[in-house]
Structures are given as structure tokens and as C-alpha cells.
Amino acid sequence: MDIPAWIAFFIGLYSLAAAVGEFREPGTWAAMIEDLGHSAGLRFLTGLLCIVLGAAIYLVCPWRPGDWLAIAVNVIGGLCAGEGLLILAAGDRFLALARKLMGRSSKTWAGFSALLGMAALLAALSRL
Image 1 (cartoon, helix red, strand yellow):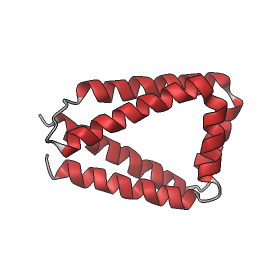
Image 2 (cartoon, one colour; image 1 turned 135 degrees about the horizontal axis):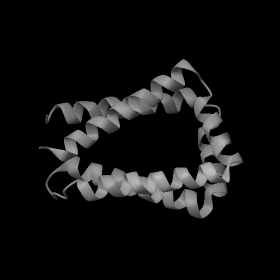
Image 3 (cartoon, helix red, strand yellow; image 1 turned 90 degrees about the vertical axis):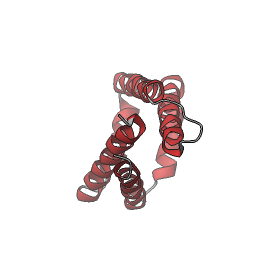
Image 4 (cartoon, helix red, strand yellow; image 1 turned 120 degrees about the horizontal axis):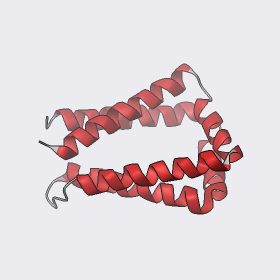
């Protein structure tokens, strides 16, 4: 079984679905960031979930130095776990940065998410 390809496949589906949701209802991502800013409990659970998912991806995916998809999936898992740590340790500052990065360009970020999702799906499907 090609574990990196399957993980990339589901990351691609997630990324595409998130993009479609933002395109269908613009402002959803900004609203989620605002919700996180107002709820310490939700911020804590989000940070914990990011750590758990990132660690699971990182630990399950075998490290193969010559396999670019395995390396990319491991990096994504590590970044996801790191994001969770940042949300737990400095959620207010992390969300302020997220607000600045997103600004009013949610369609741009949704487009980037859609492109990333399609790239991940193509990479996964080329190996499955």
C-alpha cells in the first residue's frame, strides 16, 4: 500500500472541499478565524486536533529520502503539528497573523487551496 499517496489523496480532497465551501459562501474562513478568536475552548481543541492529525500523518508516513511525495507528506504533517503547537501556545498572535494574511482576499486563498488540492490529487492518483 502506498501510504504517502493515500494521505496526499485525502489532503487533496480536504483542500478542494474547503475551497469549494469558501467559493460557495465567501467569508466562511474569516468567520472561522473570528470564532476561534472568541472561544478559548475552541482554540484549544483546534490546536489539539492539529497536533494529533499532524503527528499521525508524520508518524504513519514512511520516510523515504528518494521519494518526493513521502517527503512532502511528512513536511505537511510536521507543519500541521507545528501549527497546533502555535495555536495552543500563542493563539491570539497566531490568529492576528492569520487575519492579516487573509485580509479581504478569501477568493485568492480559496483558489490557492483548490490548486493545492488538485496538485495533491494528481500526485496521489499518479501512484495509486
